[in-house]
Length: 371
Ligand code: SF4
Image (cartoon, rainbow, N blue to C red; front, side, top):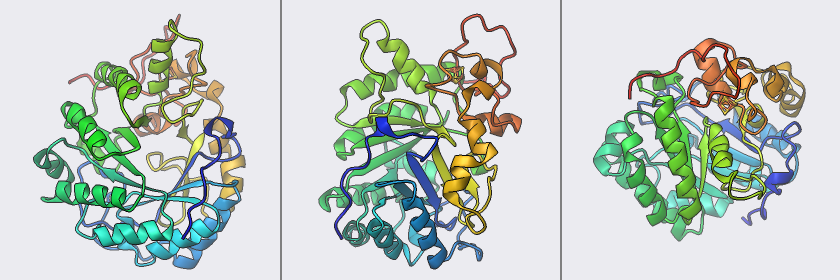
């Protein structure tokens, strides 16, 4: 299966019309029981999951966003679906850029990776949450997960499939980041996606880093991005862009694009959309507030027209210090974390250490204080 060529210029995407990233959680079934699991994954598939035909209709609709739409098949473990290769092939035929975030389990064999590559997969994203087998396996709740993940990463490179490494940042993993950075380089990954914990699902039992430590990590990540042979992006920490802009401000007037060429931060509902295993349309998998169901409504229409998505794309509706912040249009804060702590997706992100000029209002609820 030939893969669609490069996607649209990321700086040219109008995020009020289409997402950079559409995630479809194809299943919540997974053999692992990771401490941070957003999906509260279970060993078996849900009886009301989108069927193969419903999934294909969803992919048809995704292609209406425009050429080269990026689709991430996530879970749970997508490999728990026997029709996964069929879905990858189908999406590729529709001109979508299909990518996959499988779990690091024994089902992720080199043969499976090759088959997915042949089906047209554009990128394989694997999670590494520790710099050693012991640290990673402890976090993922399964002995041998580290070795299986590294084996799959090498198989992806051997098959010519670009590799992305995903890492969760929380108090339990923060010290591992330098060792994981070295692994990302050793594995020849094209992108390191660094996810800052949002307390949903089983992630509620983990400890977030404090705003002060998050600031130090984000500053360090900007240094990594300037030197590393791979791109760096953050998930649920759009203030990475604020930190990068502040660092660059005195040295250059160059356009503010991030390590993978985007001009603006992606936040839930603004450049990002998520469809759950049962078809609910969310701004993000970490912001479980539904704008409808793909079984009853148009995904494209809901993304573009629903009040929920439109409000998330209007930083002037944000409250607290995010609403007062001069960086709100390039950052905007994690709407998911604001929602997790307050029930209001337009509230302020408690992970951000920055206090806007002249701001004297309340600080956000949910700020972590122990490191
Ligand atoms: S206060 Fe909000 S908008 Fe401003 S940099 Fe922090 S998270 Fe971003």
